[in-house]
Length: 167
Image (cartoon, rainbow, N blue to C red):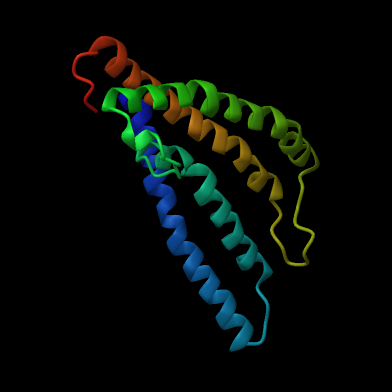
C-alpha cells in the first residue's frame, strides 16, 4: 500500500511541473505570434498535450488528497464512520466500474492510434498523437491505483478498528 501511495504521490508531484511548462510554452507561442509574427504549432500542441497530462495523470493524486468535486449535501452530516462507508462504497460501486468502462471504451481507440502511428493533422504539428490518446488509459490506471489504496485504508478503518472511526 505504501508503495502505491508513494507512486501516486510522485506522479502527482512530477506532473505538477507540467503546469509551469504549459505557462512558459503558452508565453513562447504568444511572443512568437505577436512579436515575431510567426506560428509555433508544435509548441502550442505540446502545451495542450501537457494540459491533458495534468488532468489525466494527476487524477489519482487528486483523489488521494480528496480534491475531487463532491456534492456533500448528506455526506457532511454523516458521522466519520458513515463517511468512510460512503467513500468505501463509492470506490467499489462508482470509481472502479467507471474506470474499467473508460478503459474498455477507449482501448480500441488508443490501440488504433498506436497502430497507425497517428500524427497531428496540423502542418508543423507533433508526430505523436497516439501518446496523447494513451493518456485516457493512464487516467484509469492512476485512479484505480489510488482506488486500491483507498479501499485498503477504508477497509482497515471500517473492519479492523470499528470502534475508532477516525481517519
